[in-house]
Length: 268
Image (cartoon, rainbow, N blue to C red; front, side, top):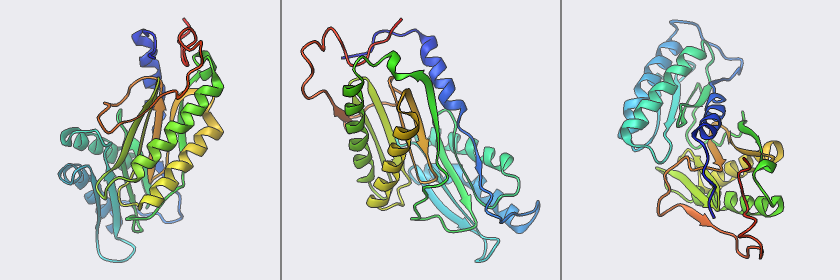
């Protein structure tokens, strides 16, 4: 079962809505720094070093700079699991510079930024292996799911099964990559954790995102939810390259009239 042909403008609107909602999150922890301070210099050095090192390290890089104490800066960079090393470096470079320009004096910040979001985060505290469920933020495709889903009960059942399957798949990844994609009929999903998290912490993080999306945004046609430790996105069109490892689900027992009444149709 496939989506009917859509005009290019439909895709473009969705892409713009979702990508434009990404932003830098500068955390007000009460610890600020001043321009030209040791922390500021260390922050600049560490963030500008990330693009080269993350591509060399296979898409995830965790590091710190400075002596132990208030001027030490910790940082991480994570690329989406299907990016090439070259593209990974380009997107991390963009995101790192966005943080430098947006977060003027905060000692902690993160961003999933770019057309293909990559994570960059820094802090005055160690980040490695630490599960961060806050701040949590989301973005949506504002079109109503009722515009395309002909059977909401069946749609949400399949949606939930796919999200859980992709979350489990991602959490079972390696110390280098915790990333998974999934397809169920027209529903497409992508999830990723920073791979320094344990399997259980990664699954906790992704399930938190699923619950958040279900609570806030399940009536929309697609969207994302993200924290400093993990990210999920789903939509009704392919925004990643499916592979042999992509989770694939289908309707286990489609209703008799499913040919005439597909799960998702586009109303012109």
